[in-house]
Each structure stands twice: as structure tokens, then as C-alpha cells.
Length: 311
Length: 207
Image 1 (cartoon, chains in turn blue, purple):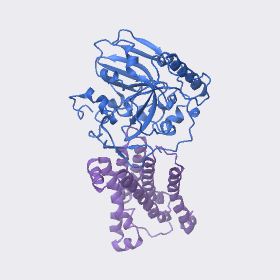
Image 2 (cartoon, rainbow over the protein chains, first blue to last red):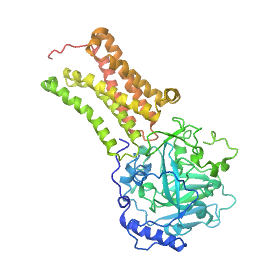
Image 3 (cartoon, each protein chain N blue to C red):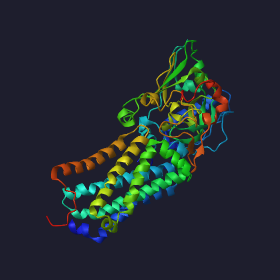
């Protein structure tokens, strides 16, 4: 009922061909324009990009693409894990623009191609931990969210950053609260220091290619030290605000999903334990790490905070 | 219809059909394309427990509405299959999630209400499975046996609550099972109120 088999996925299955060919050309051009190694514009369909390697990457075994692109929580396209890969096939991700507004000196609306040219594209291999208790390792592509946010010059009044996903009933007929429980459009938020942290990734691709639709194309966040639902997909709006913004899962069940939702084996979900997780591909469960193993990088953001109260 | 229900071969066919979910499950796991096989097995076996329980509970209303007492011949088989999928469900969880750790299992049963509910539902099926034979009906006497087997109402309810309490946000399937269960239990309440004691044993007389 919820989980069905994965079909033998090829990358070309997951994105309409002309979209991904055009985008890949932009990815290549973007990388080339910023001095990274250029690849020939007519590289073969499986041409790998030269991406800047990141010191934040883990050396853990990467989860196969079929799983990353076939086992998804993207309720706009259905609540079963195999539904988004089927239902998001025709999701139109071009043209795409992101509006960045609020308490900033220079509000902007940037189209995706402009965003992709802001910084050299890095490969960041991150652990990704779902609140449900499973995890994967994904070679994401992008650059620090702070690079984008600094473009608009947030003012001193800005204390939080709010994010909003794409929502439209025509392309996303299943995006109803009757089916999914949660309300749409999907919204998320970060404290400004979390958003400016270098580990926070503005992500445009994975496994050397642009994002499959079901993974939140064309641009999403990846916050590896938090539960996966904080890593909002298919972003259309970013707004700097002075008060803690509403976040979708917290609005739905406040005592189960907090604003911070940092991965923490010591703080259980009210209904289930967070002490262990199942790494997809493995049988036995493994111990969950505080901040999903990124304690060294992010713990200082939460100094003095009671992580049980600020779950 | 009566001849079909009385035939030995019908029981064989129904038995084999009850094994189809297991075969399909085995095939899906064997293919190796499942992203989260343990979750798939746990979830699928769980689904079939509740389905077989609901099928079991629908025998009595169906035999009365269709006037086919021979349907009762299949009730034990469906009930035992619910228990069988229950054993698979429990084993998967205890072995692959709890790594055969009794302490961890105990902690979960005490701390996690949805597991308390699930464990209750499963535990109540044990005496029912053991006393499912004709020998036990004789040993207990039909009235006591029937009273004991009404525990299936509690078991099925616990199972539906277990499901409702474990889903993250999409409650449609748990609610659907709850609705079906409510109808099947409601039927018994109404039948009892209407006709005195229609669920007392009847000799298979022609009507």
C-alpha cells in the first residue's frame, strides 16, 4: 500500500528530456564561467560535471540513485513513497524564479539560471535523516545558502528566514490536506544564523545532474543536521522576517514537529524513538548521531539552548 | 453456491489464495528493488492482519444476510491466517527492528502507545489461535468458547488503533479500516437488539 517496488530507473526517466538537456548545458556553462573545469557542451547524455569538492562531504557509502529518486516524501505528489517519482514526471520546472524579499535592502527576483551562476557548484555528500527513522547519503550539488541570501543584504531587523514551496492545484492535484493532512503551500523557516551557516546548502542537483522532479526540482534546501522535512523543496519564495515564521509540520502537529527539529537521539518523537535509524540499503538499524553527525559544525548555534524544549 | 461452499476443493483454493500475499511479498523482496524492505515487509504483513481479521468478522454478517451458514466453514482459516501474518509482522519487528532484544521490545511496548495497542491486538490472538479447533469447542462448551472468541473484536479494534497511531499524517487508510470494522461490529449490535440472540448456534437446517 505505502511502499511498492522501484522500477528500474534511469536518470532520463525522471526528468523530461528537453528540460534536463537545457539545464545541463546551463550547469556546464555556469561551472565553466566560474573557472571550474569546463566540460564540452556536447558531452554525452551521461556526461559528468566537474564540481568543486567540499570539505563538508562525508566518505560514507552513497545511496544508489534509484533509491534517492524512487523513495520520496513530497506530499504534493502523493503520500506514498513511490508516488512522487510517478506523479511528478510532468512537473514544469522551467521557467522558474525565486523571489527574495522582506527585511532586506535589495529585494530581488532571480531566475534559476541566474541563481546557478552565483557561485561555483560544489558536490556536497551529506547524510540525510528523515524524522520517520530512515536515512540516506546523497551527493547533492549546489552552494551555501548564505551566498544567495547575501545578495539581498538583509537588514539588522531580520532575525529569521521564511521559505515557501511551489503549489498549484493543476500540477499538484493531490496536494490537499484531506489526503496529506498537512496544509499547502509547504512552508519552512530558519533562524538567520542557521540560514547563514556554510553547511546549509542551496541545492540544484544530485549525482552530477539537475534535481529529479521528485527530489524538489529545480531548487531546494538541504539542511543535513536537521530532520529531512526542514529541507524544503521546489522553493519559490524566501522572506526575511523578524518573528519565528510558521512551518508546515509544526502547524499540523505542534508537539511532534518543532521549529528547530535538529536530529537528536536523546529527544524522541512523541510517538516513536529517535535513538536509531535505518540506513536504506542496510538491514540492521544504526545509532542516530546528534545533529546527524554534524555536531562539530553546528552545535555552537545552539549553545545554552535546551534542545528538549526547543525540539 | 451451497455445493461450492461444501466442496473440499474450495477450501484448498481459498487456502492457496490466502498465501498469495505472502508469495507476492517474497517476490518483491527477492527482486531486490525495494528501497526499504524491512519497512515494506512490516507494513504489508500488518495490512494483511487487519484485512484477514475484517474478512473473518464479515463471515457472520454475510452468512446471515445471504442465508449461507456454510460460509462458517471458512472462518477459522481466515482467522488463523490473520494470526499467521501477525506472527510474521511481529517477527519482522522483533528481529529486524529490535534485534531480538527483549528489553528493547519491553521498553517499546511500555513507552510507545501505538506499540502497546499492536501488541495487545496480537497477544489476544494467541488464545484464539490455540482454541481454534473443534476439540476446544467441545472442551470449553460452545457458549464459553464463543465468549472467549469475542476477544477478536478487541483484537481488531486494537489493530486499527495501532495503525491510526503510527501514520504520520495520511489517516485515510486507518479510517477506512475503522469504518469497515465499525460496520461489522455495528451489525452485531443491531442484530442482537433486533432479534434477541441470533448469534446462538444454529443447526445447519434448511430454511
